[in-house]
Each structure stands twice: as C-alpha cells, then as structure tokens.
Length: 186
Image (cartoon, rainbow, N blue to C red):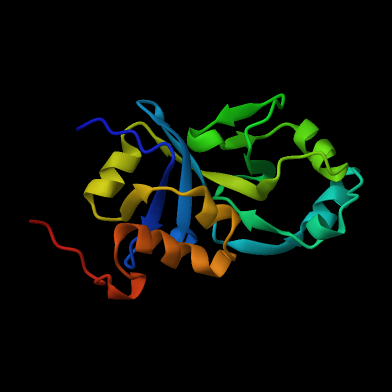
C-alpha cells in the first residue's frame, strides 16, 4: 500500500460511515506515520464545560470567557484523558508538535496556565482521541470511509462546532449535502 502522511489534514467522515462514533465527524490528524495515526474529532462538543473540568482537576479557572467553553468528544480512545489542541505551539511538558504551529498537549501544565490566563491564544480541549494502527487508516481511505483535505486552523478555532464539517468540505470545493450515500470504485 502506498505510504501517505496526513499529519495536519482533516478527515471528513463519509455519509455511509459504519462506525456511528464517527458519523458526520471532522477529525484533525495530529500524527500519521508508518506506525499508525492519531487525531482528535473537532466538531463534537459534549455537555461538559471548561469550568467543570477545572473544578474536577482542582485547578482554578480565572477566565469567565473560557469557563463556558465546551469540551469535545475527541474520539473513542482514552476518553477519560484530556487533550488540548492549541495554537501557538508553546513550551509544555508533553506536546506533540503538528503542522502550522499547532500542538496537542496532554500535560497538566497547560491547564494550569490556561487557568491563570497564560495559556495559548487558541485552544480546544477534547476527552479522548481517535487512533489507527499501522495501515488501518490507509485501508479505511481505500474503502471510501473518509475524505481528506489539508486543514486550516481557522476552521478549528474560529468557527462554531456545527459549521466546521461544512467548512472543511468547502476546502475541497463542494458541499457535504452533495456527497452520495454510496461510493463507487473506478
């Protein structure tokens, strides 16, 4: 199978996605190499808000703007663990650097900084992530489960969650509504 690297790309779930956890999702790929891929779903907010998260971890949140910011279902793997997708990259204890100055951080020091108003300018917090083993994502792409397009940070950080999937489709040049329910092979 041909080697591809989708780091810094969006995955757009096709309408016939069999796994309902990924139905109508937009996933940002943070790492993709020969060992597999890791990403976070960026358009599936959950009921929990930042204020509740900070209360649960025993950290103060001194920003009323951030208090009502929703957390997101990032994917079905490690759903009890928080992942902060952010820009700029910064210097945190456990950060995976992604394209375009974005980072994915899992260490608590970033949450402490956010609580004090010193965190990254743009961020979203997910619970869990999406992961694929070696060759698994490539196989799913070959089965027409996903479309991919180079990501733009503005789609993640500047648009409401409900507009992100459609915005990513526009990066490809068409509307989600125009996708056929059944995909064919040439």
